[in-house]
Length: 233
Image 1 (spheres, rainbow, N blue to C red):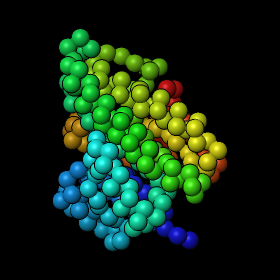
Image 2 (cartoon, rainbow, N blue to C red; image 1 turned 180 degrees about the vertical axis):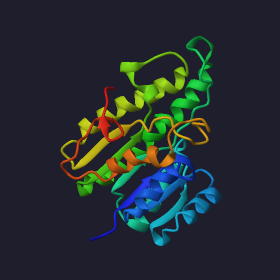
Image 3 (cartoon, one colour; image 1 turned 90 degrees about the vertical axis):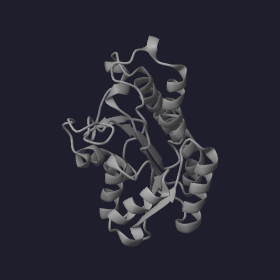
């Protein structure tokens, strides 16, 4: 049986690195995407997965960088079986409001949180379609849950809601292609983004993403999850 290859973006630290760690433990080869190649290499070595953990430079905000990254993965390891769109930013204050959030900050947030995932899928999904197999996992947030939408962090909230809509749209497009596409909320996790007061560990935050990455052919698609359970959009 050939080794599956997974791409994890934003994988040099936090939840992304933990997702990579858990996938390597499952025998999956992981290519860690990191804007800083030195940090990426250091992260890959920390997994102690030998040939199963590889890092390569990736800026999801740069189409050329995305294309170079995916070309590297395909050349070295073949078509990736798994894509985890984990790279994300949260550049605003939690108490920010729509009326005092600069347009530039909205653009910065959407550039990574939504368009980064779009760029990755645009390059990876056609490869998956050729082999009729793929798992796409989009790292969303409970703050992007429209059914529980509230105030604060408007750019971040809206970008994650848009990512959920993108997830459902892509899932519908490829539902006959052997590709399953889902998103998840990891909860409030102790990372550089989540802060030291967050109640959840990175292990807990990564668990559902790994579960979605390894779904069987009969698994769900087009859904939003938390703790391996579907939650309302």
